[in-house]
Image (tube, rainbow, N blue to C red; front, top):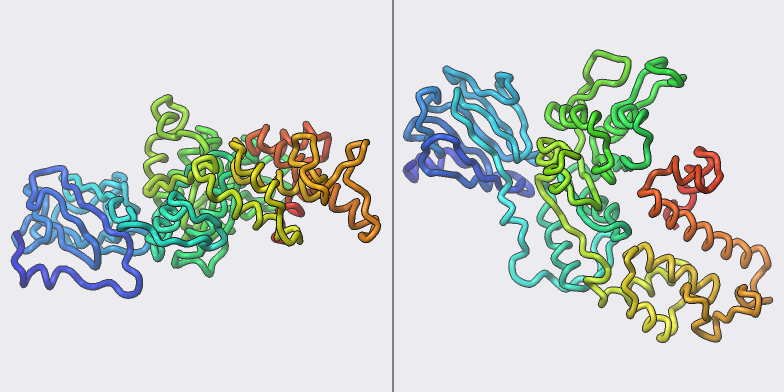
Length: 438
């Protein structure tokens, strides 16, 4: 074991917010058998002064220095005799995400995230809102605490949850607390891009790279350079494209279609899915190496049925966003007794339907303030201009229709446009209008 004097010279305090701690697990006999690195740097080697002493003839006395950084761990070879290797390439210095393995000579060393650090300490604080998310239930408070502990880090995250739980809100909250929060936040729905164009959507292409490429395209990675890239529904990414994404994550380089020269990008990737990707890996539907590269940190989002106490708060919030002062207690009571398989998205649609039509979708009006006439239309009001009433009704219908349609097509906008009988470009503009912040 290293003595106190040696330890004090090996570890250095890290400025600002400390990156997430990691655990170093050697694949050869070592002392200690594993090492938790929670700040600064440590020396790994075969000499007694190293913080992690590895028993291997291919490991130099002071072989490599490992330093915590926001992206994970910076590995610097210290002039070792047999070299330090990552992905079969000898490296002098590289920044690696947790979940990767390096070789010190022939001796393997795995860098793993210390996931125990993310567990909330004691009861999470009672907060009703956090970076645009709303909820005071224990499940949501625990989620808020996990996201808070990610602040300052740039490690890849996988957000898991059913459709409609608010995965994009969670990813935006992660981005907001990161060290690239001043950079762009670029979302890309992997299920909403055709198989033929998904690689171009990710990495871009030059003009003339393929039939129909009349203009050059930047690609999501380049657009997110210096910020965060949100890959929604990552489980829908075609298998043939997954190796290219893995290379981009491991090297920090992209190659546009039709080009040979790689381009460096600095992007924090956050992926999301409603699928059980671990099961898909076992079934051969998703690459195991890509899964482990994306799921360094996994954040599960609770479904709305698992946090019914949040329903009244959310319903009243959606009503206020639409200009209503409040909802009647009988409306809140009805909403509180529903299961909402579509989660928060379905709850919001129900509130919008009530405000526009006076019903929550059961066919019967819920209060005198929202009565339907004999023809099933909202009660006519003569204190509100005609165009305002008409536009509110059309907007509510359009929102419900498009969201339900995308739910049916699992986010595939091309298929949704086909079913709706709309031009794909027009459908995209319609979605942009509906999702624009109000």
